[in-house]
Image (cartoon, rainbow, N blue to C red; front, side, top):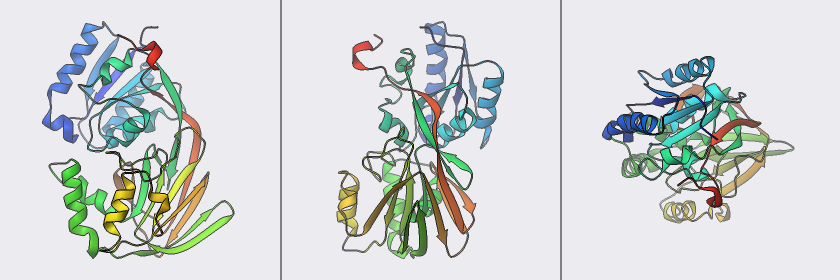
Length: 301
């Protein structure tokens, strides 16, 4: 089955794209090579990708492809929630959590070619304080590091590790009360994260076992970080064993209410904004269609 009319949205400021502007030409060459009914449009400012995606829907596109990092993915996907338009993803960010979870390869590794299979999955959407997320949202140290990381001119795993290391032991924990269905948890916490997929990105698994299509969200609380547990916790994050740490609490539910002592930042897919002291986090089941690689038996040559 041929691809539907498509719009490729390219973020020239995404870390990978800024270092590899040839990706814009690669997208245009891909369209020409396969004679697709498609165009490429670059973003010009924050949130522009959402406007461009909505315009693509109005113009009859059945596929809208985000070429960028998690923030670009979030902006494009936000416009597609609840529609029958498919999100395509060429993951070019520093983490690419959703892309990794779904097995979507990076540019130069088959991401464009995978679109030709015209194969998709329907996944859930998370809402945090009314803002959509598709991979993960977070409070506490999570949001603080996202804010600092987003301000960097050069991003990547090494930059993230350096930023986190500089902030690590100066960060003060906050009191949280978390309501999840019939459960309540109160604790000082270093990080409160709610995940749709199983990882932040770079194979750092904040919610091992989480699925993007189960109608549930996975909450992870890291209560404290000390010079003595930081390395064991880091090792657990990268080996899918975070749930076994005595410093961690895991919950799974359709809806959470997270209360803290004062308003502050939260991040949704790495994009940071200020939010109230009380935050409602909920799931919209089966609300987004996303292009994924075809099963091995039906791979496009």
